[in-house]
Image (cartoon, rainbow, N blue to C red; front, side, top):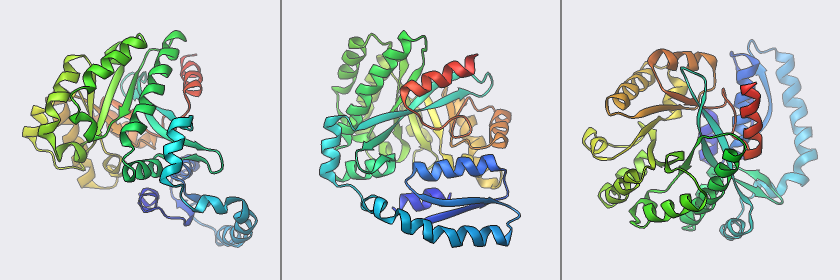
Length: 330
């Protein structure tokens, strides 16, 4: 949670990770911090030995000094114009994170997560990209860029023997466009893809603000066989009446509840209720942010349908995901 807190606020702090969990969990946390653009000095498992902590804190400043010149440009965020150019010249890439059926352990889909292969700064995370895109009114262009590449990738996977769904994050503004269903239908046809292979995700809080303007488009999308997913459920202000009106086929439980379900009774209650509610409304329920075996076991016990998170796999390029899939199948 502290990693996400710092990332959301654009922190440039260096971190030392300490936990009573095993080294695998610390490694996942370190990967997550890097994914959010945070700098991790190192990690220590409890009980913490004073000598280890002193060594880490003593060596870290010297290490930082040697790296300072080479990473100075990383401390300044890229600008809006850089993003505009990046969208047009191929620097924006989708990375794909697998989703597994909890009961069968089989692949049920992937979520396309945006990354920026910046020529000087390296691979930049989604949070920074979305912040810039929102500020520059580039969310639509960014989404279309990711969508096009994802459809191409989906076709390539099919030809390589992998048929799966791809979830694409959409802005609420895009669902106000009545032409969206027709445009998507044409794109799917051009790539010889079944509409059932695409899932469009939108966050609960964003959609509920102007739901009336989006209902027509959402209904048309479902009539064309395109699945809809309500993302980060539990963080917005939807009512049961609104949920009943919207033709969603999938509900994703926000990672903040999933990650705390083992230590927080209220978070656990929200996870339980969300799974029950989703099933009663005929939706598939996906839990985000799975990082430990214990969380997986809990979700299996509660009857959650699918899971996504670093415990399964981190986001990866399309060719790596194909290799990952085949390695699990053998």
